Length: 147
Length: 147
DNA sequence: CGGGAATGGTTGTACAGTACAACATTGATC
DNA sequence: GATCAATGTTGTACTGTACAACCATTCCCG
Image (cartoon, rainbow over all chains, first blue to last red):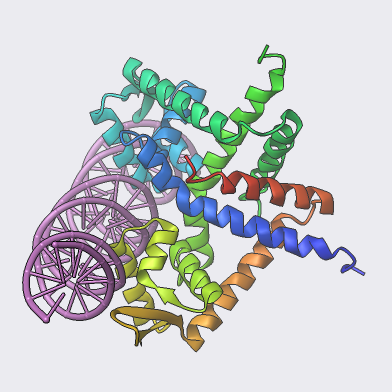
């Protein structure tokens, strides 16, 4: 009864393979495009921009990375002048992280060049296909971490 | 003239964001699921199975990894008993890499548990949606490395 | 044929990203 | 106030990766 859609398993197989291939490639591609901002740094900066600043612990929780990893990443970003730490008057333990002007600029620049790359890559796609693809990806990712 | 589809840029934005999020997560997820076989090892073994054996250089070219990286990965896989090297009678420089029985087994097992994970993740999807998603991913990935 | 260029692979070295554990500091609870 | 929890840093270790130098073999041209 459950087997009257012969294409279902095949589609899942393809999705699995393609997602795997993409994942394997992604970091290296990103690094090639922006040697000065790894995929991880980029996402961290992006989060800071979205939230208008947050704590290291929040980053760790959001990205399920160890706090030591975040600590060092943030230290590097600070050294690079992209992020600054501000004390939290309500809690002396906390440092609130904010983008600097330079950080905002670099983030915008990288975002932009990524946008261009994606636009080119998707140039031949129809509007409805793009919409559906975007919707599928969102749906797929939304199911993460809920198991 | 090119701007009469207001949704196009938005869709691309979403695709970019979702692909990025997925890429960031993928390795760690894979490692959590199969501590004994990283995403890279997994894809290398998969390639060996597909081709029924090949040379280290072929792996390097296919995955655009440095030959030193492949050399060490293969050494580790050999140490783990998953891969064996056979001399190429036609060329003394070459070692033809093959899965061992154990390698075939481990690969099958990991593939299977990945398949299960993907099936679960995509359980609520309709057949046509799966088909379209698979097609979109394939199309997206096919555009890689052609620039 | 002989010698330089190309090919296949390993090893030395370096770096990024990551985790875990130990720690210091600060805050919360009873 | 004593104890426990939360925030963050630091020491240490491991993986994946690249680049460069190298060795062994093969290819190709003059």
